[in-house]
Amino acid sequence: MQVTETLNEGLKRGYAITVTAAELDAKVNDKLVEAQPEVEMKGFRKGKVPMALLKKQFGQRLMGEAMQEAVDGAMNKHFEDSGDRPAQQPDVKMTNEDWKEGDDVNVELAYEALPEIPEVDFSGVELEKLVVKAEEEAVTEALTNLADTAKEFEAREEGAAAEDGDQVVIDFLGKIDGEAFEGGAGDDYPLALGSNSFIPGFEEQLIGTKAGEEKDVTVSFPEEYGAEHLAGKEAVFTCKVKEVKAPKAAEINDELAAKFGADDLDALKAQITERLEAEYAGAARAVMKRALLDQLDTLVSFDLPPSLVEAEAKQIAHQLWHEDNPEVEGHDHAEIEATDEHNKLAERRVRLGLLLAELGQKAEVEVTDAEMTQAIMAQARQYPGQERQFFEFIQQNAQMQQQLRAPLFEDKVVDHIVEQAKVTEKEISKDDLQKAVEELDEE
Image (cartoon, rainbow, N blue to C red; front, top):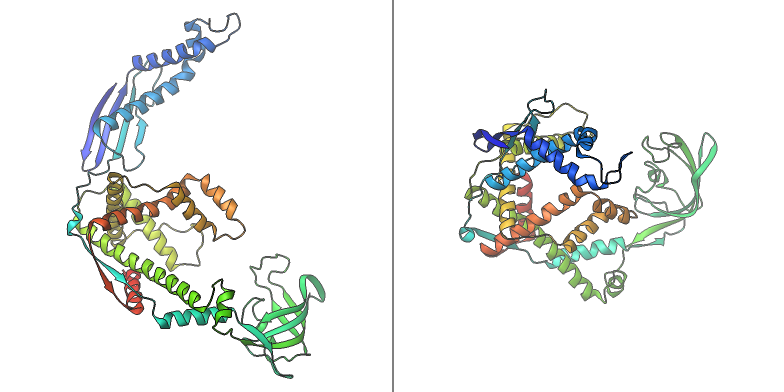
C-alpha cells in the first residue's frame, strides 16, 4: 500500500492511496480461510469446500469488503502516524472508476486538519465577579406577586356590574348554526375576566353583566383551533351569570407562607431571597463568562479550518434570518448568504470552540451521567405529561445527547479556567446587573 501526499496548504491535506491488487487478493483469501470451516456446499462436507471453489463462488462478493477495509485501514494508519485530526468527515473517493478485478485501487483522501492549539497562560487573566444582594424592595415585590397568584374572590354587592379582573360564575351553552356542540357547555364555571382562558372576545363581552342576567356571547373560533370541526366557525354562547366576584389579594402573612410550603413568613422571605440571589448569580456568571471569552479570543491565535468557519457562518446567517422573519417556520426558502459580519462571528465561535475543547481534553473534563440526567430532566419539564417519552427519545438520539452535553462541557471548562484566573468581587445593584446583561444581548 502506498500513501503519497498531494496537498499540504495551511490545514488542507490531500493524499493519494494505492491499494495493490495483490493486497486485495490476500485480504479476500484471508476472509475465505476464516469462513471455510463453516461453509456448507452440496457435494462437500462442512468445512471441506476447496478454496478455489470458494473463491469462485464468493470472491467477488468479498472484494468490496476487502477494498473498504483496506482503505479504512490506510486512513486510520495515516491519522495515527501523522497525528492529524480531521475537522470534518474526510472526503474519500476512488479515482479509477473503470476498475476491474486484478487492478490496483487508487483512492484520493482529502480533509482539513484541526490546528495545533498553543498553550495558554491563564495567570494573566483578570475577571470581575459581580455580586448582587436581594434588596428588601425586590423581596417585597416577589411577595406581592405571590399574593396576587393566591388571590381569592369575594361576592360583589347585589346589582354590581362585572369589571375587568372580576370573576363571574356562569352556566353556558354554545351553539353553531343553532346546534349545540360537544364541549360547548358548562355549569357553575368560575371565569376570571381578562384571564384570556376562553376564546378571544368571549370574556370582554361579559364585562358589565350582573348576577341573574343572561347574555348571548358571539365569538369565532380561531382558524388554528385544535378541534378541526370548530376551527374558524362562529358560535353563540348563551351565558347565565350567577355570581359576580371581585378579586381580593391574599394578605402577606404566615398563612400565605403556608400556601407556598414555608413554615412562616420569615421562612418564605428567606426562600425568596435565596432564589433571587441565585438568579442574580446566574446572570452575573453569564457576564463574567463573556468577559473571559473576550480575553481568550485575544490571547490565542491559530489557523481555522475553512469548512468549519463556513458551516458556522451559514448557521448564524440562517438563525438570524429566521429571528428577523418569525412568520417563516419551515426551511423552504432561498439560501441565506453569510455576510462579513457573520463570518467574523463564526471565526470567533470556531476559535473559542476549538480552544475550549482542547483545554477540556487536557484537563480531563468530563460530563457525568448524573449531570446529563439532570439536564435531560430539566428539558423534559418543558413537555408536561410527556416527560418519560422525552427522556427515552433523548436516550436513543446521540445527536440530541451531544447538543445537551456540549454546553455542560463548556461551562465546566470555563469553571476550570476561572479557578486559575485572578477573580475579584464587585457588589453592584440589580439595575446595574440588568444593564450588563442587556449589553450582552446587544453585542
